[in-house]
Length: 258
Image (cartoon, rainbow, N blue to C red):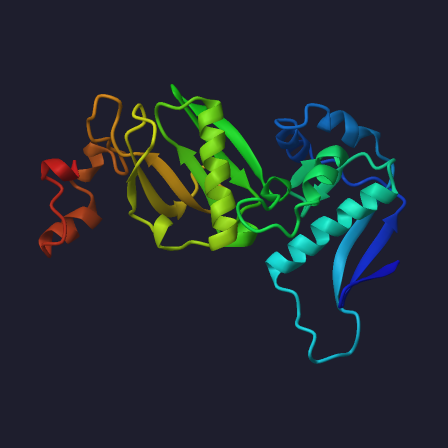
């Protein structure tokens, strides 16, 4: 089925079979929707919704950019849910699972500007724990920015982490990787228990690809935190560090480099 939406076409494809079950997708969804796994197990068919380009052969009709397509599709899926109240769930880009109730409510803001856009429909925030530190990473944000977020800052509970990751994600979707989140940036968190937070662009240690990494620059006692890249036992005779030392670019014996 093709439906005209303004100057563009949307298509709905009906597939008389369930989607392949993705355990990780529905487990992630269950953080905000406890019945996600149960709902996914009940479905027996699914619809595929997507944009199909210009509704007319008109050179003046501009092609949709990614964000424009995202907003249009989000609103359109909300309309489909309104017309088909028997739908059990929505899967966004194979990464994010949402309840129809949540999608209906938030998709009404599909065309609202930052910070009111419904970014929570387009990405997941996955919490984790490393020792005493509560952290989180995103799934789906890279479609907008080329990077996910990996957040591991001391002194915050799960709600504090989630709020900060959500705010950063919403900002990145609207503004991209601008100078406020450049690699090497250090900022002071509003919470005095947190202290200074550093930002680096690097590859994720969870294997989710390139990330914007937020981490504590100092521990709670105010001491500079260090992250061991090469064990000290190897660093003394590591060929790369020996070579860098010989040309004067790096001295592994200096205290700040240990």
